[in-house]
Amino acid sequence: MRMRSKRWRLVGILSLLATLAAVSLPQAQDKILIAYGGQNETVGPMWVAVEKGLFKKYGLDVSMVQMRSGQFNITALMSGDVQAIWPAISSVLSGVSGGAKIGCVASPFNRIARELVVRREIDSLAALRNKIVGVQSIGGGFWLQTMIVLESLGVDPDKNGLQMRVIGDEPTILQALLAANVDAGVITYASAGVAKRAGLRSLANTAELKVPYQGVGICARSDRIAGSPDLIMRLVKGMVEGVGFIQDSRNKRDVMDVLKKQLRLRTDQDAERSYDTLRLVATLDVAPDPEAWKNIQRVVGRVSPKVAQGDIHQIINSSFVKSLEETGFLPEARKKAGL
Image 1 (spheres, rainbow, N blue to C red):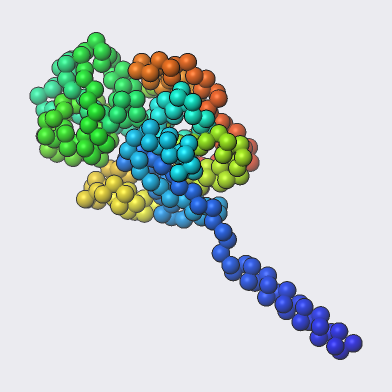
Image 2 (image 1 turned 60 degrees about the vertical axis):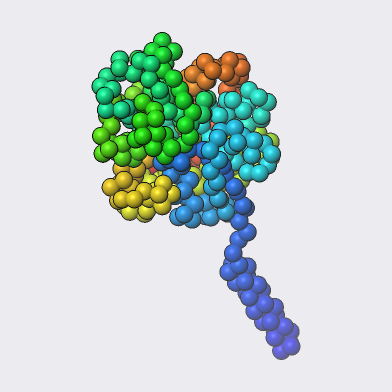
């Protein structure tokens, strides 16, 4: 009897030790590499979620890699070099029109916060006639926002003889503006601040423009979304927490530090401007917006007629966000962020 008691005690101790060991061991993290294009505030939710460990809560080891062309992002996704992308809708539409099978599940941006910055001697929208506008690529996200802004301001690029010149990413476009190599650019508030301090002029602040628009968000290959819905859901949750962290004013310093590091901003003033911009445009209403997609499809269709023929409902997937609304995850995130 005494021997049996010792045996059961030993079994109990070993079971307890095994349980403690299992608890103490770090959980395996699914490695996810995500490609993005423009180096600006709209990558903020992902940078914040990565640097603050918010994805790790959901068993994800996420890394972000910049590829400065939407086409490169699509190619890397379809080849399997990256597991997801954070693209402009225009890039997705172009990729799908070329045969890529891509799904997009969530986006935290539904408006454009930029300024139309021009050389000092250009004092009105009418004076833009026959001027050169800097863009990153034709059909890409930077170009898309430029076209939507100009259209919303009543400026038809074709009728006004505007030349869209491919310069490079936003820092390169800013330098081209400062050097008078281009006449105008639709750039972020942080870049606009630098330009205005150098004597350039702002013709418009775009934040209040009422246009159907949706910005960058989480997209992946359609087969991955269908085959790994749990992974995609965890990715969306981490992104949502990133937005919530940004919108919670108590985290201002932390968010500014992330932006200052990632955008290589020199001063706290520039970091605060980027922070204010990000909070202005980031939203927890992250469901794909069909009206916005159709508007973007129309604009991109001007330079790529094949894009206009696509069915956006084969791309957008609202089921993940719908589930997060119904289970209370998103309402709780809004409440926690004070929204």
